[in-house]
Length: 193
Image 1 (cartoon, rainbow, N blue to C red):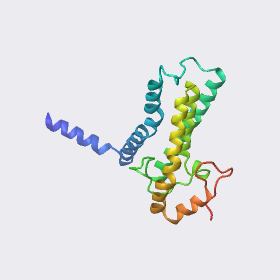
Image 2 (spheres, rainbow, N blue to C red; image 1 turned 30 degrees about the vertical axis):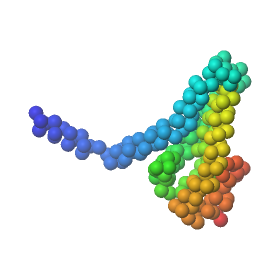
Image 3 (cartoon, helix red, strand yellow; image 1 turned 90 degrees about the horizontal axis):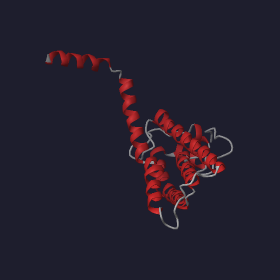
Image 4 (cartoon, rainbow, N blue to C red; image 1 turned 180 degrees about the horizontal axis):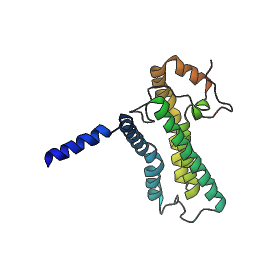
């Protein structure tokens, strides 16, 4: 009986496609990065803020937002999440990495939204946080979004971009000179010097 089980496992193991196995590993890397980074910024911290501000002068309102603000929030969150997913997929497909600093892309990615702005992932989080603040009509969430923005405005030029120059050299410097950090270009950068 034990030999039969070992043979069955061997047959199943032989049928696993290495590409499928690599995709599964890569998907897990992405899921872990998303749960830890935007998951905390967009879910855990806002929940803590809403809980901590309950019953204070800064209490968010639980009443249903006006129809206009509700639809603005829905549109913003859909746009933010779509941008986040699209940029993460580009890192995986063309960069051979994830958005996480512990598993960064091995190739410089200048496709899709990255042709317009250097930090579309941060933009997607900021858009989503703004949507949450609008939906919950919460000043504390707006303060959190502003704090997140300020932290990244400081972090990117002092740490992130220096690391990118060290990893990608002249290619990143040319990209940096042609694509803005925060406000998108009106036309996509073609990649020519």
